[in-house]
Image (cartoon, rainbow, N blue to C red):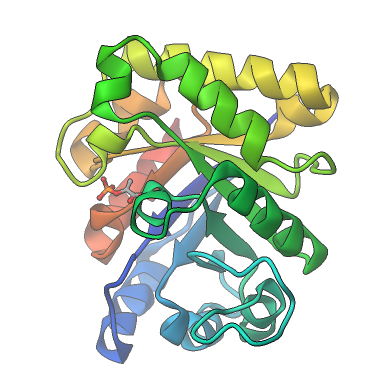
Length: 250
Ligand code: PEP
């Protein structure tokens, strides 16, 4: 059975200018993370500079979105090949903020993921239910539909990461109970294993939604949680470093 590699991933969202690269320097100065990968996804404007700062270190750099096409008349968009060219190794796709703000469907996310794989990027595909969906008992159906619709057929453990991010936990300080995280992560693992066999067992499953230094160890102790996708707490080296350390120790 293939064991997923642990991954601590940070999503800076629309935060950060060159001045904030100092946080990366602090993180790198203090960070050794035996047994886990570390990824930061800054705004596109910082990818190249962050990748240069991270060269030769444990830190990988990723994008927060890409277009499904390789090039063309798509003003303001960035292709997967461009992210790769700037120094990215990963790209977050289908984040709930993109699904909500830009109306991205599962089909759109799948097309973007296909483009990412073709460009040699690891696709970090996000799924998760809204509060209304959870309260109506639809969580697993929603997650199943997002997994089925968003993930391409030709992925492997090395090219796919899945992040379970309940929308109601993102940026709210609310975190599901560990039993709720376990239920969804076990479900995602079973779905991936039944669709992709051995490869599905090796895909890293991240939990995302208000992960902080104070709750990281408890979340990482949950079976089938192989890391975290961290928003707010990834902006400060001290916080993100503590989360990386908790994952390394888990
Ligand atoms: C996110 O946006 O992916 C996220 C998990 O944000 P936060 O950690 O701030 O809840």
